[in-house]
Image 1 (cartoon, helix red, strand yellow):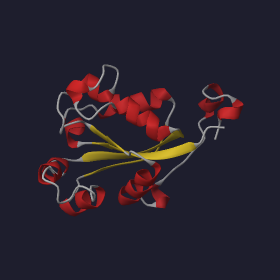
Image 2 (spheres, one colour):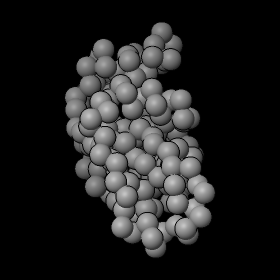
Image 3 (tube, one colour):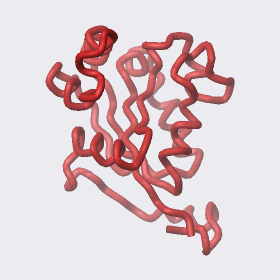
Image 4 (cartoon, helix red, strand yellow):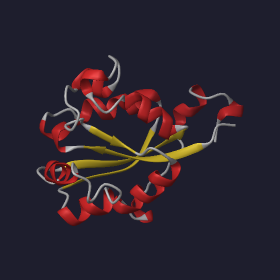
Length: 157
């Protein structure tokens, strides 16, 4: 049986401004992953500091905070089998010029900092990050009727 996981995905301001949200969301849905929460918001510096707590104080942080607070972003909770690894592979390496074609950053990005998407890197990070953006009541998990045709019986969570 495959473990079902949840991950936080942020479609960053450059993704929103470039009108790529629908194309990125479609990739997750096409893969068979469930989007169980979504909200658009304009991050405050305080909210950015909570999300990027491990980076506050680093030399690059002020530019990162300026970037993520400059325009709205779209926060998502995505659920599925091995979703943390799967989404990170779909997103691709941080630098768009080094990301392979077929990944989100490889297909749409050329920058290291304006890299379109954030995706949690571990179960612990995912749990912490989801709580930064969503309450438990805002999560809407569901069993897709398509799962019968996406996973064998012994693979379903």
